[in-house]
Picture 1 (cartoon, rainbow, N blue to C red):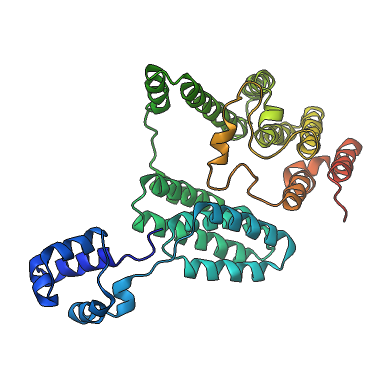
Picture 2: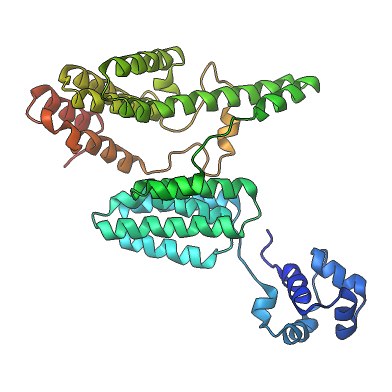
Length: 374
């Protein structure tokens, strides 16, 4: 943990004053080598030098020390899941107050700020106050912006950009999202293939196998994740919708995605149900909703919403364990269940079926299977 950043402050302030390490050393009464070690973080100044340095740079001792508390990755993961649980059990405003205190304390712990921003995205819908929802998403965007401006971690900055764009889309600001992300997509460089080949050449076939499985899994899930939006965009064409969904269902069957990644499957069935309903094909819409209910129920009994591999992807569970939030879901189980119910019971797209007996039965069945009591 690098909580004390005095080395960076000394280096920055010395350069601001336009003096050399030797000149600073002469002022303090030490060697140039000592100043060099301070600035590279190899050693800290003696405590008796702090008032002298602070005075010389015209800053407070607190500013000189630049104490920025950091949190270990495992603690960040535990904190996220604790707060996610709190959102399901405590008053919304109370949990938000705790989140803001944590942000204030760990304002320079960028991995934590990213996860708090994600927490806000995943729970903003829990308040019925529209203004509070918007405020929560704007706070998340502020955190993501801070990470982009201050963090030296390239991968973290990239994450922050993606999540900020997500906020823009939720807030119905597509132009801002495009401005942030760019309007074109560059071809992917198959980095993981090269890594796998390198391990293969080194004779480490186990690691090569793991890397290839991770690569295949990611590409598979990314493909499936694109299908819901793709089918909605093409909703006006009955023929196109059938082609898209036929291929999607074959993909789901071949790779057993209902059990491998239930959440992705739910999104496909849900989008299909909406599109069929918009087309006036209630029979197929209801068929998709029945599939949706079946997967929902199995997700809390037979299968799991937590990230996991299977008999084909049998080398990726360790990779999931390394995720910032681990393999667990990003929302509390009860919140997920209610969200599953609301998505079909309260979606205005399904309003034309509100008096259809089968539609009502599907909602009743889902309530029963998820053990949701009014």
